[in-house]
Image (cartoon, rainbow, N blue to C red; front, side, top):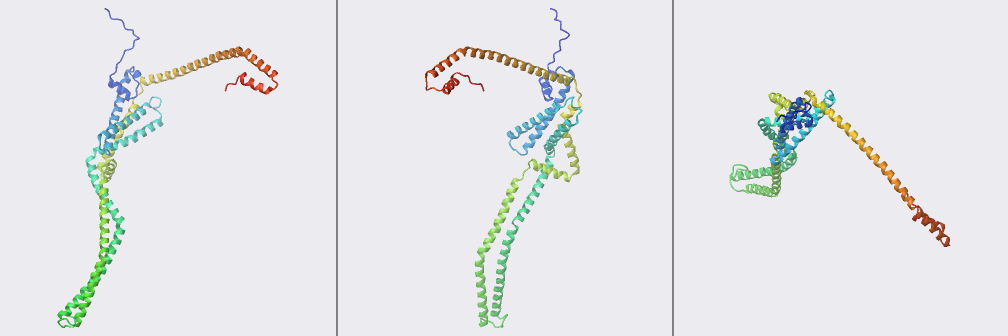
Length: 399
């Protein structure tokens, strides 16, 4: 059987793969239009591939960012995927707004470039922190030790006045005791020297002077022992207060040390401290930031650099056609509704006229009946009859 002839006007059919359709979706191209544009098929696949690369990079960067603050992968992974999807949506919105009609306009590009630049700078931070992870961990350790030292100095300053007061009070008590102890030791030495003849009058034995010196020594010693007994509770209280202050400082230092971590802000601060004293790292840091920012800017750059093909022309014409069709449909729908309202008005008016014509004789008959009753009943007033006519016969105006 001979093959059926194919019309010259019949269009060739092209069936894209599922992956290519996905790339077209990423590049915001309409499948029905781009599939008919041979050159633009590959062009928008390239844009879609770039958008997908940016999307994956954003997802990884945000996932790592959340992992620095959240331990559970069941939480930080979905959060990273969600933020990656937000970046994807922003990128699709940005490239969708770029077309041949505004490629020569500076203002839209400035806005899109600033937005992409802001996102790119922020996304570059997690990636850089990951690349310099080992160096940052060392710097974090040094920074945390410095924070502990600053915290200790702050606590010393905070409790310095109270400790100074307690220490001065304790020293004052000790000075009084030491002063009295010196007097006791001097009196004891004088008594011993008087008793053994090495001092004083030079007579050996317990004589009257020796007994007097012994009595003076024993009196001072008793006063010293009494002073110690009186001062001991106060000294114990002071010592307890000083120990309490030291204990409080240690607890606060331990609590502060427990709050130290290696979260995102801590890592960012450590990175800044690393950059201050390392020129080699600083240059590489700015180079990496520029490269990572270009990853976010790539979709806009690619869409801007690629020439406008037949797809944009067809999309513009298709959009214009849909606008015209929408306008025509609205106008036709408006005309139909106007016609319906006019016909409804005419038919309803005829029905109302018929209703009034049909009930005219009955209403007149009822009025005659009321007039007869008014004539026969002398107690009825004209106003009363008129009110009945208004209530029962006359029609009420529509609101």
